[in-house]
Length: 151
Image 1 (tube, rainbow, N blue to C red):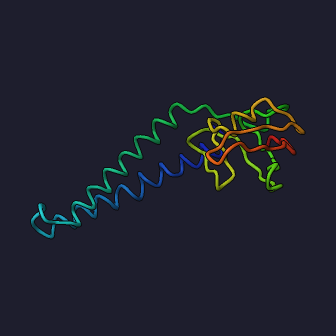
Image 2 (tube, helix red, strand yellow; image 1 turned 120 degrees about the vertical axis):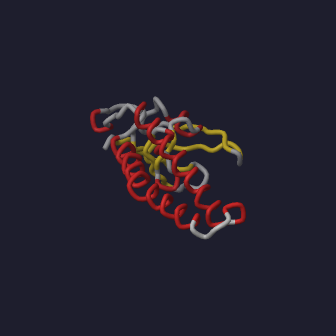
Image 3 (cartoon, rainbow, N blue to C red; image 1 turned 90 degrees about the vertical axis):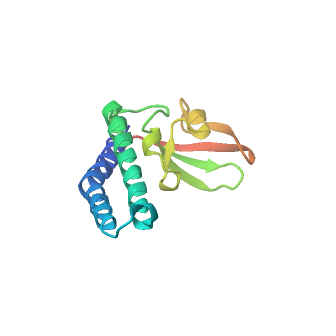
């Protein structure tokens, strides 16, 4: 996991524990004050939210406890975890830039590509100027590696 990904998950965990959890507890207490719990939609919604928050807290604690932080700045050479890669789509000539990151911090719209994705797996070990082919749901796609940076 990158340092930035670890920090983002740590921030989310802190928010869940310090803001969301207490808010849910207050919502449950308020809903209990409305009477019969069996027909109390607010109470059931608050309990459902509590279940989600507690589950996410456990998930984040597990991820963060097992995370190994890798600093991409110390890396160089061919494409590997942490690389920021600029590609040109062979079909559309569109240029896109992705950083190859761990599963927990992946966000394709944010330019963070899951290392387990077909594209990332095809890119690992490649160099600038290389062309990779990737099988996608829409068929085979070809990408040229324009640049590799470790930032």
